[in-house]
Amino acid sequence: DVKVTQSSRYLVKRTGEKVFLECVQDMDHENMFWYRQDPGLGLRLIYFSYDVKMKEKGDIPEGYSVSREKKERFSLILESASTNQTSMYLCASKRGYNEQFFGPGTRLTVL
Amino acid sequence: DAKTTQPPSMDCAEGRAANLPCNHSTISGNEYVYWYRQIHSQGPQYIIHGLKNNETNEMASLIITEDRKSSTLILPHATLRDTAVYYCIVRVTGKLIFGQGTTLQVKP
Image 1 (cartoon, rainbow over the protein chains, first blue to last red):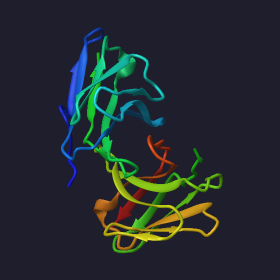
Image 2: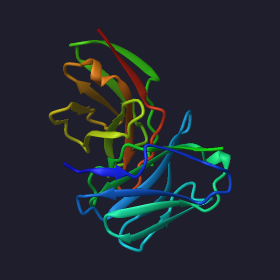
Image 3: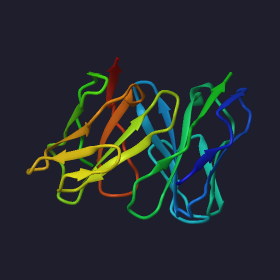
Image 4: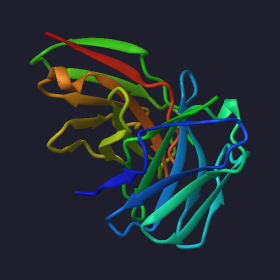
């Protein structure tokens, strides 16, 4: 079974802090994604990566950056966390045109 | 990307079939229909996808109309664990766009 893991289930940070969210997948998928999910807005794509060191902006990249140094790991970085970045963050991976597999999510609260 | 329309909520009795409809009248010829579900506080879970033909797997069946403008996800014997938000998505490849989905409540 594909396994996508995220470093934390719950995270509380202060405004202005730098935040790292880690995602690891164990099925050698080339494509990885970061979404955020907010009530009433559904899932929105932040960034995605189709290969090591490659990244593409999604629909809401502002305030975020990503890093893909190894195929199995995709990191989401909040350079200076703000309260409007309080959300559920979901990582996903897939191979080719196949379905995406999601991690359990990280609920981030920025105070 | 084709837009999908789903009812906001549905109830189903435990043990009965749950039939979740989805309209995607603007779907284009090469767009697949995907279904995911999200159980509270968990990440979305892939269920099934199809292009033209009906599909079945261990979780569900997907019925796509001949004109491909609508589809129905069928959970043949719903259990309490199937209570979740179900998302119908049409997409060629790459990123998925999740709408509001249908909240399915399975009741004992």
